[in-house]
Image (cartoon, rainbow, N blue to C red; front, side, top):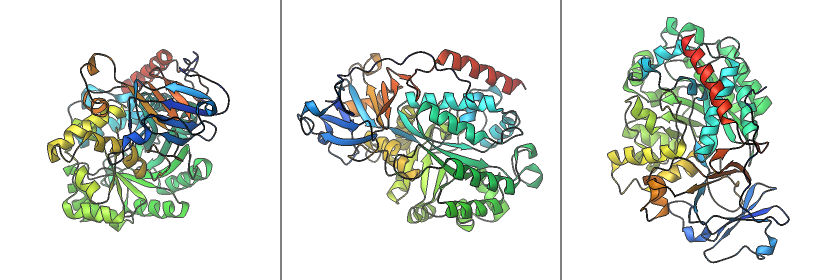
Amino acid sequence: MPTTPTTSAAPAASASPTTGSTMWLRNPMAVHLGRDVDPSRASGGIVIDKDSGTIVELVPAGGEPTGGTQTIAEVVDASQHVITAGLVNTHHHFYQTLTRAWAPVADLPLFGWLTNLYPVWARLTPKALELATTVAMAELLESGCTTTADHHYLFPSGMDEAIDIQVEVTRKLGMRAMLTRGSMSLGEKDGGLPPQRTVQDPDVILADSRRLVEAHHERGDGAQVQIGFAPCSPFSVTTELMRESASLAHELGVRLHTHLAETLDEEEFCRERFGLRTVDYLESVGWLNDRSWLTHGVHFDAEEIARLGAAGVSVAHCPTSNMRLASGIARAVELEDAGVSVGLGVDGSASNDSSNLIREVRQALYVQRLRYGCDDVTCARVLDWATRGSAAALGREDIGRIEVGKQADLAMFRLDGLAFSGSHDPIPALVLCGAEKADRVMVAGQWRVLDGNAIGADNLALDKEALIAAHQEEARKLVTG
């Protein structure tokens, strides 16, 4: 059972309750509907049915909801807010919140970073994972994120129910999650990177993968918890496990996820071990299809980008992590132009040291402009990566957009304080002035952040002081052994 306390009552929303289940977010300062969509379609606000958790009407500028205000149960003044679809995080490692800013790896590239951290992570416990997951998800929520993926591939002794723990925290916080059953099966003695005590037998991995889908995977619009399969990387899993994971994913109708083309070291590993470049390897194991989304994709060449787009593969762009580990700059614009769904990911909090997705939007803008210039990388485009692009990467059509019939997953940001003083246009200001936190966040028509503070599915605010204290203690024990 979760150990994180949730004690204090959540602050009340500024609204005018009447009867029924509809809520009107009235006259927002600005609404981001997409880079090619006229925002005036929703300048008068958004009407939500709280019972179904969906958007039921977009109110044009100067308008009122169909049927008049008497049909609305709650009216929320959104005139001080920029509203976006709830941000969607396509890649994380929740457990890594326990090893942020650890000096022995602060200045190392990927392979050295991993080999130093693997022994530390091998000491992970259920309690530590539950606290790490809660911290990561709460931080994401407060940054405007309503759906997140997590890639958990460490199952040391006593951690057989790691994904089950994450499911419980997801439901407790009322967020949506794609929880991937990761795996490592290629240890040091067989030419892989991970130490032997961190790898598992493929039969154990596949059996647990099937169990998790049968126990937790939800299908269709509005799904809260979904399961995917995520062999960690070419240098930590066998070719056989990659093929068998793809086959099982096809049988069970779930998605596939892995790290690929993150560094030149990885490219060289694939050439030496498999005699293939990374995308050739992907195709050889049955992953070059629209069930797959890949993390990083920094070192694809033009021909590989075209193949990925033609196959319908998606990519999670993790700009901060790629800069932190000096991995390179992903060719995100070329990938999207080729037909790849590009989403954003914060990556693990030991290679980003943060779980803040609105901050990642700004990082994506700046690093991609270094490669492609300003014309091709606009504020609206990177917001699309964080919303509709990320949703597509996770195989979701019901989230990531502010449209009638879509899930009422929304983030509301205020543009006040010194950081925004003197700004003129709300959407550019949201990205360029460095927004850090959402003021309010809604998942399926229910508030999950109010006044900048995460609240749980029980509508109680998280006791963040107690959470931080317990999390810090587990982080200390993990590193010191």
